[in-house]
Length: 460
Ligand SMILES: O=P(O)(O)OC[C@H]1O[C@H](O[C@H]2O[C@H](CO)[C@@H](O)[C@H](O)[C@H]2O)[C@H](O)[C@@H](O)[C@@H]1O
Ligand SMILES: O=c1ccn([C@@H]2O[C@H](COP(=O)(O)OP(=O)(O)O)[C@@H](O)[C@H]2O)c(=O)[nH]1
Image 1 (cartoon, rainbow, N blue to C red):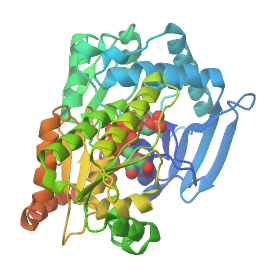
Image 2: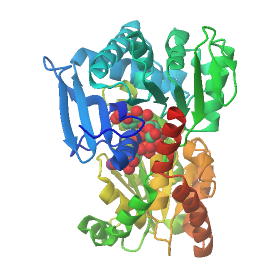
Image 3: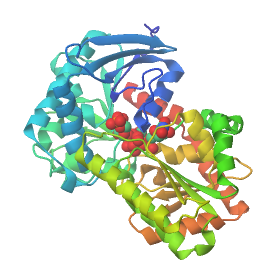
Image 4: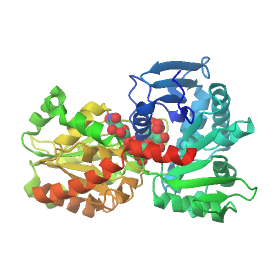
């Protein structure tokens, strides 16, 4: 095990763990890996495997400074906890989509069962001075279950998704039983001030809490906890270095040759309905319709690795996008040019960095997103001498920091088309000015600052 440091070992707990040599597209895995890589610690969570009899058996391994402890899930636990309650009910609610929420009591029971199992396993792994950092909506009640087992360690929680207003949160049956367990943490972190306002509003007006000094809230039973906004980020310098060296990689030169001088627009997203992909395709189609002079001059590459395929909406969006990409190519393609390249596959960061750098425009248009690390990665990967332009949804947490992107309402496909046209024609001086301003933000607020700010506040 890793040597203990003053203030205790860091124990990170998340449903998704980025195990060595196992790709895990998703911002949480990318960011936590970067955060743990610096000082090390223990990372506990789901192995990503569904297993029968061996489920709940603990697998441990070490790589670099990180100790990993993971458990498999049984088929029923996976279906009820991960697919059912976490991604069938909580995810849509947290992304402002109550119409998609599929709430079932059996799924909630599975969610609580798996959280209890996490609490039981974790209790065996922790030492009295460890600092525990729990991540995301899969594990909201974990601290209350650990407290019930007599765990007195510092425990923090970070929510990676947006948090909608109280008026929406109360649509979840038994919302108080679940959300009030957040008060068992010592610190609850969210990405933005907007999310923090929603959290405070819920606790003050639905849970009977009162506001104390320094972001503290006091519950009717006397328990106090702190809440704060901690915008997550990336390893800005590390990613920029990787991108600068990517030019010589075969896959990158192959992409560049295949463009034959055309400007590249890139999108990289898990195939998720929150990412606004149908609207994005529609916005690109509007660009082609209104700007015939751009035909043959531009290529849109959308990388969209499949995600959460057991949930109905994710399968539906996949079919919808296949139809839409086929329709746009069918309408505008010529024998030597396809306007859209649409790929349902995930790529490692090493290649993504080179793809981002090859693109004149980064197109990031989620309908709602906690942060969206792709937006930050795209900026960090640009060539300082000839940077591309970021077109970014106002409803991504990243928009509150990257104010020099071209900000759009992702549902307004005309506005997306206008922003794309502007980006493709933007003079070098303006591209540089906007890029420098965004890089200033990312150089300061990188993944290290995020980790230090959260853990500093938790330990204080
Ligand atoms: O674990 P999966 O079900 O495969 O999904 C991947 C992750 O998706 C979500 O990521 C969020 O975290 C990012 C980093 O903070 C943030 O930039 C993004 O806006 C969020 O959507 C989810 O919250 C994670 O739990 C998943 O692991
Ligand atoms: O093929 C892919 C697609 C995405 N990602 C990574 O997955 C993360 C996506 O994070 P983001 O915050 O944008 O969205 P999330 O998927 O977490 O909702 C980023 O670090 C991407 O570089 C990746 O490694 N390979």
